[in-house]
Image (tube, rainbow, N blue to C red; front, side, top):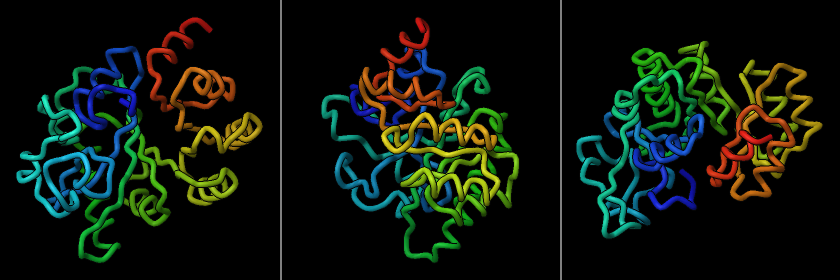
Length: 237
């Protein structure tokens, strides 16, 4: 569902298209509404590509139902509510999703906001059989610790700028793994993480050559924009 897709990113249409191409799953950017619903959206504000302005946290889910993406003016694409999307999937446990947590709080204290966010996620995991197939990644250590304290079964990933710091944080917090840009990790580092029982996700993979480069490093998951090529390549190699 990357930027090369015809559909706006984080829409149900884009994710279903990705799954239909043969991908195991997708990364989904997740934000929190004013009434603590989880909504798929990437940007810090709604200003650029929608008919609304402000932050996701400024609105209730009922208000956000009127949001439409303006990047595809002739078509009618809406925001995606995570719970509603998961409810619509048959065999949900057969798909792998990574929830990339976007912390764009409102006027409240950060600790209050993160408490609301982790509560909402915990409710999702209670409602669906996804503990082994839906992962969470975040750059924020406090968020990961709070999530851990509420549900230690959820598989959590640190999203670092550098491999070394990510490895240290993952080991110190007892996380499931590291999610890192493909150009910031090499094969030796992937092997090192594996030797410490950490999983590795790479992202920033957006064409055929970077698909092949990522595969050769042997990570556990690859988030790619070039889905068709990666699916074919993995089937044939």
